[in-house]
Image (cartoon, rainbow, N blue to C red; front, top):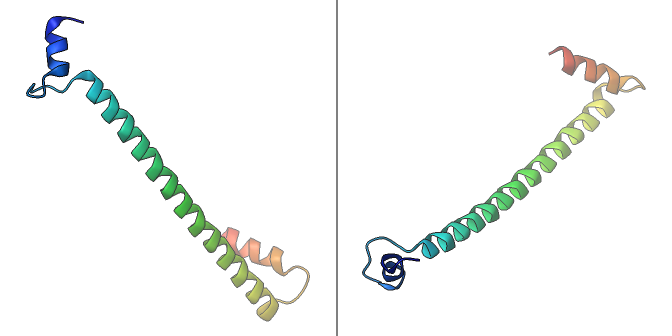
Length: 83
């Protein structure tokens, strides 16, 4: 390391932060981004579980009320596919 680089690393008045500071900042930012990505993933997954549960619940109710019979699920799936 040259004298200039050593002076910048130890000089708090230096206008350019030392590379070590950038490395620490980059690592901190990567960690922060990863933490939030995981939180978003969990939130999305939780909402998808609720969506799928509600879809299943509505299908179950509709089949039991309006479409009794063994082929009710097949008829419903064909109708959904065709729309």
